[in-house]
Image 1 (tube, helix red, strand yellow):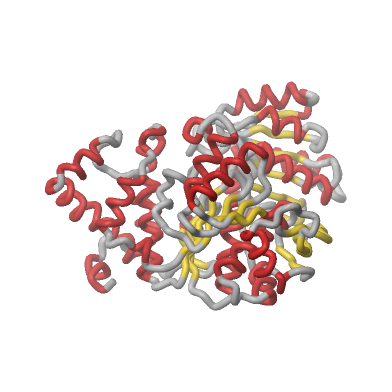
Image 2: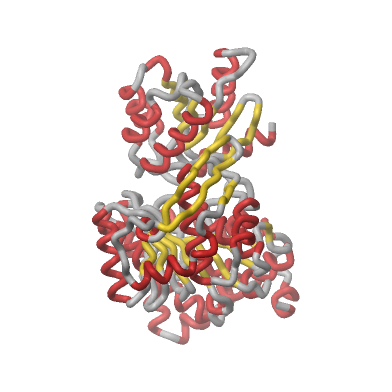
Length: 482
């Protein structure tokens, strides 16, 4: 580390992330064939394979993977490990993506890792490309020349931060898919796969089975995989992959049952019991039930509202007890209690109540709306925006009967969107006089607050912002700054 600190290329973490962000334009122009692991493998080899410096847990899925990643990291930190965590997107601060023990790395670590990465890019990589024809051919296949992609560099940066800080374990969330994701060069102690939905079909495929096949790519030979409840076509894909790789498959519905679920505005409590009604008596299911015996019938609490968060917590518990059986129930309880996840049904204001949730798939948005209705009734104001590759019609149906006013806005600028089309679809699904198009997000928030207060002076209507992490990040930053 001393060598890189002497270079003083970057003066702050902000400078590092500004430099990394310069590769985002290249990322926007990517095509499916641009996703490949051989380029990432070459980069990591050049950096002396920082991804192998510590054991890891790998998480993929269409919804809930960020929650599972955060819960796993919080439990392991409570158990006394130095835990580095990699997840996306960030909400208020870029450093949320690359963390240690639920907080930021020191500025020294962020700068030193940035210096190491910049030197690799500016000095080591050009020499390698000139000296090895196969390296030159590999990087020439990427649109934009020999530069790696933003996600590859960000992932490598996380591994460098983790190595420099001498962490004990890495908890790593995939970015897109799994099989060809830049994170898929780790060999984890255990893999976790959450619910699969239709998403990113341009890159992952147009069917549930095809998308499941991409997510199944994180399953490693002989290593356990913890699997959330899935649709039949996805489950078959995962079972086949686990059989091919001789990986124990711990399928949640065959192992545990959630009981005593209680959702309040403060969070979600639940208990776990063995699913004695399950017909599965596979060796992996029996082993899982034995390892989980200590936590059965215990009560847990996660400070995030929503039944789905109880399901995410259950997956995290199975993963922890599989990889680290010595972690006891009390440690798990305390870790869950300390879990903080921005923009997952997060209350950012009490008067009026303002909730933000990065729910951006059909299923996650529907569950978010159900939770909102159960806590705050069928009167409220929705601020909504989604990227062009989402299904706004399904989300319009979920929202139509719950909100008095719906404001459609722009979900940030990182991904392409069509707010006019979303407005048209929402208008067709409900009374047109309660749907409004306000492209400027800050103006949309101001109008939502006006609607909230004009309905009832004594008790303003609750406000929900959802549909895109980039949108809710902007809402959060605006409200907290005001």
